[in-house]
Length: 284
Ligand code: MF3
Ligand code: CO
Ligand code: CO
Image (cartoon, rainbow, N blue to C red; front, top):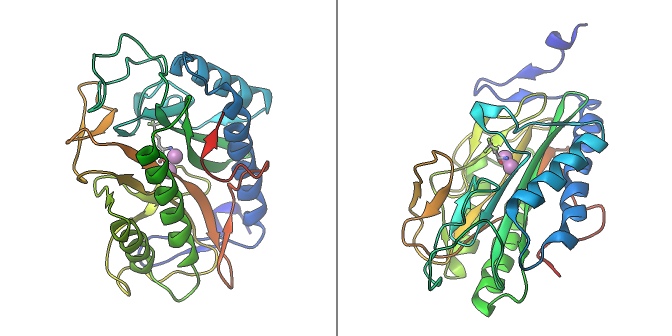
């Protein structure tokens, strides 16, 4: 049996992987998560996002792995670093956009006291993709920022709890949306999670909102990300002129966490759990 003939694809175009494939995803996910652990001590006031990305690229190379984002659709960095009201796809080294609570425009890409940031890393190990992101804080966070980070992390985990064969993708989105909205936050609609495996982005689109019981039925062997972006204000986003950086239209604060997971016989295996147990908001 050749690689191409292993497993199968559902009528929705979703790949069903074999038991042995979980090990490949586990290795890729563990490296991505280790990198997010190892970058944590470097998140300090004054640090630049360019320097953080350079460190991450070095970690990917030192592990003998490949960055999935360098060269992806013209993207040139080993991470996305999204500060404050940047929803996703913040470009390391780019000037940090001015947000609601900034008194002046930013001069550069250096972190200020109280900034919150998402770092998103995707690596390829032996052909398998590991995609994960987490929130960090430079200096001392505001109470509302800490609350948003906590709600976003918990929304991701509530979504993962809805993962088991027989449930639907709509059950995942519904669980996340219900949790986020019960905590006075909003779910970004313009970006979603995705299937992955030996490819970066594959069917299905994993929505972080929706109705229970709708969408494709979950089956053992599906691999995908769940990566909710949650805002303190309204859910609408816009992409800046660099064609990557997405911000909240109302310039309210945004947070995101992402795990790569596989559907098992009874639930989910999280491939990107923090090896160091730094499983959620990391503060220095
Ligand atoms: N890692 C992102 C995701 O979660 C994708 C980043 S693509 C990039 O799907 F080109 F912006 F890096
Ligand atoms: Co992803
Ligand atoms: Co990602």
